[in-house]
Length: 76
Length: 330
Image (cartoon, rainbow over all chains, first blue to last red; front, side):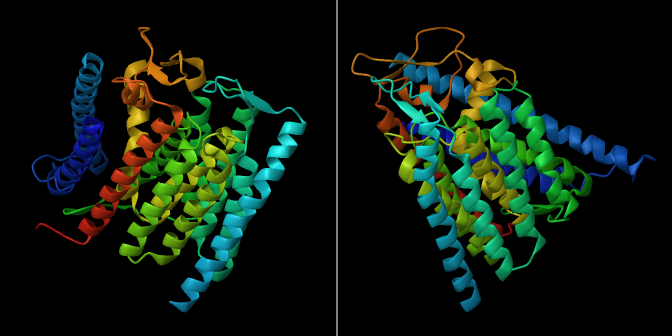
């Protein structure tokens, strides 16, 4: 009956796995220190900013899915 | 292994039966003092005792102290202190409804004992890909985690039996995950949460004889969050409570600000046969319950079981995630 909500949970799970992968494989190892003389704290700050941007993208995707599910349910 | 089994049995008995025996006494005491609220989803407008946090915290603290005698590790102390502080925050909110920012801020302070006791590991583990070391950022994560889990459990406390049922399912799923990861002491601590929630569910299930209130729901959430941090299973814990997180997410993305949930318009109304249906009013938030009844009205009991099905599904995803922790793609 609520297959779309189960789908929503499954999508969130996949996004968590993908987000973890991006963090560990790409964002974590980024270092600007090799090319530019940069404070390690600033280096971490930039990585945090990228991670926050990713969270924003994730939330945006989930909001779109949520609106789609609700409209679909209401229109039935 | 024998000591683990004995510790598990003894502490579960203490936790489960203290809540099971104390809750009826708390119900009587609250009813005698007219500390009751109207159950808005009942046609008869039944009065229900609230809050039941006292019996929950007695179960939590007594069983954790017993567990500490078996395994004197700071992690167990951290869980007990954090849960106790969350109870105090909840009881303040039960007595006087505070503003929307009170609980997140006060719960952030509840996380401080975890930091002071050093009961954490600053590596954040992800399934399939390994871990990232984030020493400074992890401190912020601890401070955020307790308010998030506390408020997430609190916001799902909308219908009879839901928060205690979800806490039971989440407790068992996280405990299984901790056993899979060979973290036995924390697995037993999480089993305590599951059995304490189950004991409270006996009185909280439809039709409720008692509501946990903020003091009860925040203890469930804070204990769950503390176990996630000290047990080093943050990602798995988040996956397991996805239905409750979705509820908070739906609420926040609709309201677009942090407010006390009692201060907003109810997104649910009733049909003539007293089933719950989505309201036609604009500007009411989309919550998990509203999403569940958007297609057709459901009874309170039916909605509770739908939420439990979603919780079991996310619990299974959490256990799969625990298995994936041991697998690395690279």
